[in-house]
Length: 136
Image 1: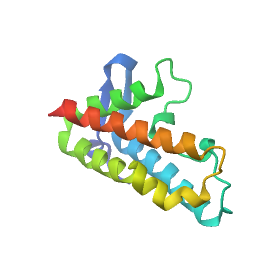
Image 2: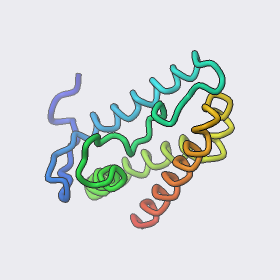
Image 3: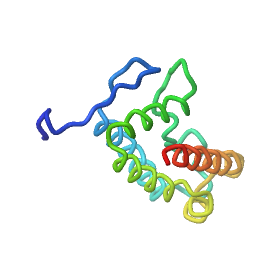
């Protein structure tokens, strides 16, 4: 493992918590890889909305909306390490781009949840772009 001195953590002011950035993004990545593994073995049309690992679901039970919590972490991180945030935003933008997401995963999505999943991916991408624009 890495020593504590090489780890990066940020204080998320409006949430009054300290978030270990490496653990945070590692958790997001693990959930995404689990989703991809599920997709590789899923029958067509079986993936439901609840299976999709949106970054916005990272803060379960949060008092604030999940979107606000997610962007609070990114904002706190951006104040400390803007380059890391831009790298993460680029990765998330490519991952959640509605056209790419739909092209890659449409066949696996359950027909009753497909529109909701696609709408959520689109909404998340818009929020991500707005956040990125606010950094400049």
